[in-house]
Each structure stands twice: as C-alpha cells, then as structure tokens.
Amino acid sequence: MTFGWLVFGRYVLNSTPTWVEQLALLLICYIAFLGAAAGVREDTHIGVTLFRDMLPLKARKVVLISIDLILAAFGATMLIAGITLMRFGWDTLLPMLNIPESARTLAITSCGGLVMLFAGLRGLFRILSFGSWDPEAQFKEV
Image (tube, rainbow, N blue to C red):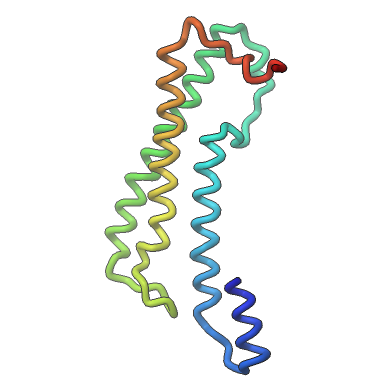
C-alpha cells in the first residue's frame, strides 16, 4: 500500500512522497523479526536434523531441550541488546518520518522477548515431561 501511494503521488499528483521508502523499511523490519519469532513458536525455523534424528530417544530429548534453552538465551540476548539500542536511539529521529529511531529497534526487542518466551516455555515443558514425552509424536499420522 505504501508503494502504491508512492506511484500515485509520483505519476498522478506529480509530487513524490519522500516518507514512503522509510516507512517501507520500518515495516520490513517488523515483518522480518516478528516472522522469525512466529517461526520459533511454530517450530519451523531452519535446522539440520539429520544427526539429531539418528540419536537414541533419550539423547534426542536432551538435544531438543538444549536447542530450546539456547534459543531462549539467544532471545534474551536480543531483548537486552534491543532495550539498550532503544535507549540509545530514543532522542534520534528517523529521517522523513519524524519518529524516534527506537521505533525501528522495537522490532528487535519484541522479537527477542517473544523468542525467549516461546523457546523457554517449550524447553520448560520438555523438561517437565521428560519421561513421558515422545519427540516423534509430531510426525506420527493421526
């Protein structure tokens, strides 16, 4: 929609809106980071599972729990670094949009918090149900 306005303004109104590109960049940041958090939530993030799937069941459970805890730690790091970036950029304005630079880094911060939440809860669930949980259950036909 923003690029539609850019084309309309440039060719119909003969007045190019300069803020459209900056808004598009801001929206792409949100789409990318929130999409990454959704990928962690749905467990569709990129991973090489060949070696993990060849392990015995107990070792596979340990590896899956470790992956979740590492992802949660990565999300916590993103959250903390994002908060630092938000504090640093609060007084600087994005060009042509006149909103704080922190609006861009809010995407990083929220993604980190969501990744930490989603992966941490999944890891906690797997730890609490370690004896009865079957990692292959998601691949069995209903």
